[in-house]
Image (cartoon, rainbow, N blue to C red; front, side, top):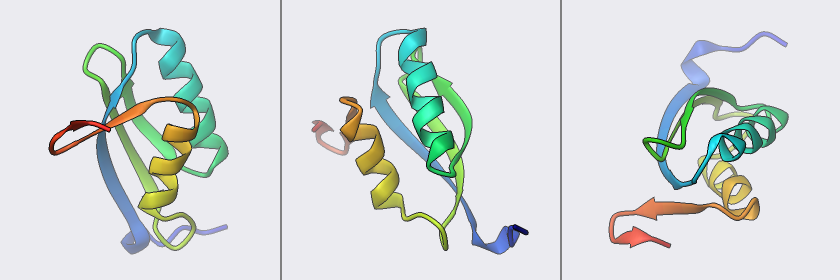
Amino acid sequence: TKINNKNMKELKLTVEMHCKSCEIILRDVLTEAGVDPLEISSNKNLVRLKYDETKIKESKIREIIEKEGYKLKWKNGFT
């Protein structure tokens, strides 16, 4: 399937995680969902990724991360 670059979005999320295993789990579930993880760092609590907005919505990506038991940081702290 050819990806149209204008549909690609980059997203940075702050995710509470503790170790390399967390990074591996997140990389696996995001890749399985069709998302391209660019950087996942437990040291920085950072998940940076690219995704095709015609294939998956940002809200679904957040849902996938939370379903694995990780907390996303919003403006007012971790939810």
